[in-house]
Length: 145
Image (cartoon, rainbow, N blue to C red; front, side, top):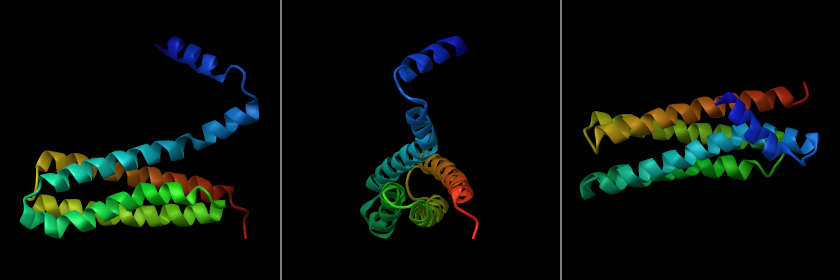
């Protein structure tokens, strides 16, 4: 399996300059965290849509907003400088933390499918760790003041 993966990688890399490959490889962590944040957003929307109307009013708007904010800030910050990007990633971390708390409360209050909520909490943990790692890596790139 390892040899097959290496062959696929070599095929994909053929024809690219090293600088182009280095740029692509440097973006892999941000692409992974963006994918996970989008996956979390979809999961939260599925949970919110499955709630009874009385619980949707309380949970749905706030949780959906926080879930949507996380991938949006990851994407939006990428268009600026490294310092700006870190600021947007920090905002995304805050939105993810807010969402995590809302999911914990939903589970404790017995709202929605506990398995789906637990799955969303695990995704939220992954997104938080990935954001933290990406922010740390970007901070190391900044010049020392």
